[in-house]
Each structure stands twice: as C-alpha cells, then as structure tokens.
Amino acid sequence: MKPQLLIGALQSGGGKTTVTMGLLRALRRKGLQVQPFKCGPDYIDTRFHAVATGCDSVNLDTWLASDAHVHDVYARYGAGAEACVVEGMMGLFDGYERMQGSSAEIAQLLDIPVLLVVSARSTAYTVAALLHGVKTFRPGLRLAGVVFNQVGSPRHARLLQQACDDAGLRCFGFLPKSEGLEIPSRHLGLTLAAEEQMNAWIDRAADLVEQHLDLRGLLEACSCPFAAPAPAEAPAPGNLRIAVARDAAFNFIYRENLDRLSALGSVSFFSPLAGDPLPEADLVYLPGGYPELFARELASQERTMAQLRAYAEAGGRVLAECGGMIYLSSLVCVGEGSFRMCGVLPFTATMEGARLQLGYRRLVDAAGRTWQGHEFHYSRLSDPAALPSVAQQFDVRGEAVSTPLYRYKNVIAGYTHLYWGESEFLYLWD
Image (tube, rainbow, N blue to C red):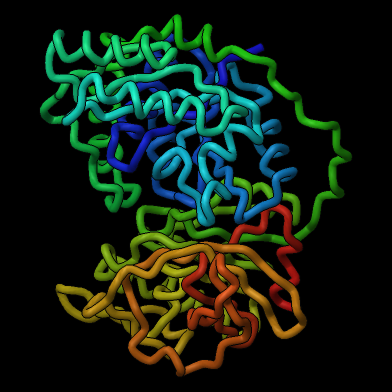
C-alpha cells in the first residue's frame, strides 16, 4: 500500500500544474521519497518535476508505447518510492482519439485514483453538474475527490463545498486567488537562473498546498495496493560507448530512452554549450532543446563543433532530434542574427515565419520497420529538400505528413522526437 494518484483537470490552464508542483514539493518537505510521472509526450513538465522532487520524472504515453510497457514502466520506477504522483495532460478525458491516450485512460490502466483540479474562477454551485458528469461518465474511473483553484472568498468556498456534497465527491481544499503565482516560462532551458526561478515558484505553490489542502486526508484516500514489477531477466550489458549531449540547450530527453541506451553500453554526457570535448563514442545522441536561444554561445564553441563534424564525416553513428538536427545544420537564423553551426547537414534553420508544428508521429522506413514519436517545434528548414527523406511519417489518423527523416552517412536526423523504450533502437542504422 502506498499513496498513488493522478492529478487531472477539466481543461488546460485550470491549475493542474500548480497543484502538482505544490504537492510534489510538499511531500518532499515531509521527507517522503516521491516518484513523479507525466502523462503524454511532454519533456518540459518533467523538468519541473525533477526540480520539485530531485528525482527524474517518467513519461507514461499509450501512443508512444503499449499498455503493457506503460504498466511496466510505472511499476519499475514507482517500486522504490513512498508515493507516486502522475500529472495529467490537457482535460481529463482528452486523448488523441476520444479517450485514447488520455489521462483518464492511463489512470484506469494503472488503477490509481484521480484528484480533479477545478478552476472556480467563474463558477460556483453550477460546478455540481460538471462534477456529477465527470463522476458518472466513466464508472471505472476512480475519483478520489476535488481541489478547487482560484477561489475568491469564504462564501465562494461554501458554495463549492455544497456542489461537492451534492455531487457525492470529497473536497480536499480550496486554493485562493494568488498574485505572483504565474508559471515560469517553460522555455528557459536548464540554466542556473532558470532553476532558481522554478524553485521559487514551486516553493510558493507548496506553501499554498500546505496551507489550504487536507494533505493527510488526500494521502489516506489515495493509498492503494501497488502492483510490483514483474520479475525480468536482466539483459546482457552491451559494450557500446554512447555520448549524450545534455545542457541548457539540449535537454528534451525521455528517461526511459536513457535507460534503454544504458542497456547497450556505457552512457556519458557532454555539454556542447560549455565546449566539452566529444567523448570517445560508438554512438552520439543529440536530443532536442533550445539551441536557438543559445545560438551565439554554441557558435563560439568551435572545437566541439569540429569534433562532431569529423566524427560524422568518418561514419560515426549520430541520432539528432529537432534541436540536435538544427545544431548539425550549416546555419541557424534567429532574431539577433545568423550563426554557423556544425555544418554536417546542408540546411539553414530559421525561426522567421515559422509556425508551431506538433502531433504524434509514426515513422515507417523502407524496410517496413516502425517507430513512434512526437513532433513539436516552431523552427523550420529553409531548404528541406536538400536531402531526401528515408522514412514516411503518419499522424494518429494514419494520414501521411510531410515531416522528413534524413540520413547522411550514419547521421539520422529529423524533427520527430522518437521513443524507443520498447523498440530495437539500433535498427535505425540498418
């Protein structure tokens, strides 16, 4: 038995992240070892979780992975924790196709209770009808109760409590309207200043959670049996040397991906932003991030770029995703000017005239092998046809999308962030 819960909301912007971060930090203050998780493909909120708890957060996504894999990941990472907290995404029932991939689906898959965060900014007793609808919409969903956010007064709180009573749901507290609790920009990178700003905001959220929520009652209500991970035979360790870029410019990394790389050999990290030398490697992973925010600094580290260029030209295996692909390109154009990058790929990346491109992706190569991933970026390539695509990508409806996957020698590059938690990763280079 241990406290386990998924924090969901009726819509984005309802206070889900505030409650999640405040609860994670409040539990850490109590001395509990907390394992955070995030529904969906988000690799930014997981960084907030890590700052709040000191523990890497893990993605749970039924598009990127099978139900069995999601269940196994939750069991493995949660086994050593004293509490497991899952932050949902979007609205509770919002998935890529109706409920498929939604927070509610994951809560049912894991059989854990849901804490519903409701913004009370423009409603009072009417919320009883909404709560009744959520409670009865999917009978298999375990609703532990409700937390209200943006509550204006004691009278407002009484009306909301009456709504909970009449809907047959427990209320665990009311967070008041608070000035200065705006979420810090999710696009700050992993700089020291950004982490200090995140910490200050998380502490403020934790103070509110401790003052206004019934934490003891919530933990008791959400305490339920934890399904221990099934025993598995440890794979024979590989002997590959794997170098992973990780710093403020490159940090969009799925934790489970790193664990899979570790099974292939030894993993070492380096910082292109700091000008670290490229480690001796049989494989280099350049994940996504914010190279456009640090273009001037990256361009100044000529030694690291020259080493990556020499490694790639000699046939070294490289996987470069989104920001990693931009870093390997010839040039990046941002508001303050144009900066030379590694020059491995014949592209110019630009932020000018770019629009958000996002969505789940399924990649199919010429041999019919498939990978699952997610596309999220604002930049674009001014010359995307400079190399041919080696895979066709499809969206969740099975419709073809134009996003390419490039190969130059043994460099694999594209905008899609791949998830290989249960895939044969090295098949990318076959």
